[in-house]
Length: 274
Image 1 (cartoon, rainbow, N blue to C red):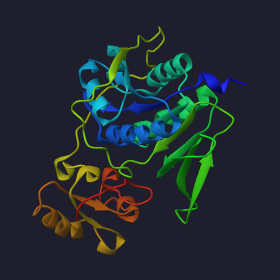
Image 2: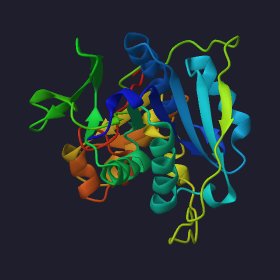
Image 3: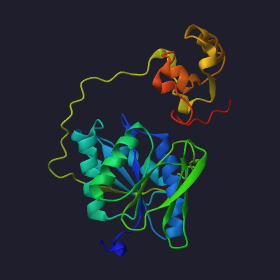
Image 4: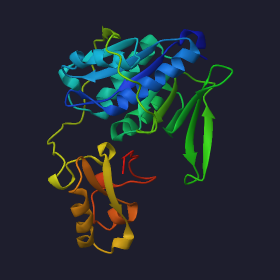
């Protein structure tokens, strides 16, 4: 069994898309800051990509003491095998006590792969985090269809890992006077993906605003009866700035809207004003 005294610090996998940090990063770093203060350790951001070192310092303003940057053309686009190898190499070398990953499409793919390679547990889709009297992270997530909440503790393996649902934590106020130390990490040979990215497609114009970033959402479900009836929601959303149309799982299963527009337990977590 590993010596748990060797493991120290709260790490956050910071996702970037096309060289821009995601809002989830700021939420997780802010929450990691609270955990680290209770555990008496540092917060470290983990940033992978190509030519991303310039955006690393922004994480310091939300509470990161350090940012580990792995900058390589091999990591320009996310692939499971390349990213998982680099993350696991970093964890094995620096031994963080806690690793947080956003429950985004990428995070839900990366988290389980890394947990399996690191021989540790993973609590998925968490909605609350706390620290026990024994200085362990208590991970809380919905269970049994959301009817109850289960709190899970990993006391026999390290690092303690979990994916955290986006939008459940609010990011701290940005502190422009605070900057985290940026540390470069060079990936070992072998961080080459067996998958080739052939093509990227942007969001269609009909859903140009992502529902998890919209200030106003007009949503509907099976009761609308047909795809054509969703036109009234399109017209309603068009009256507001930064608005989007969304639907329940039933509407998505019927093909009336795209999967990226799904809200609810099996869809995206959203925090609109309206």
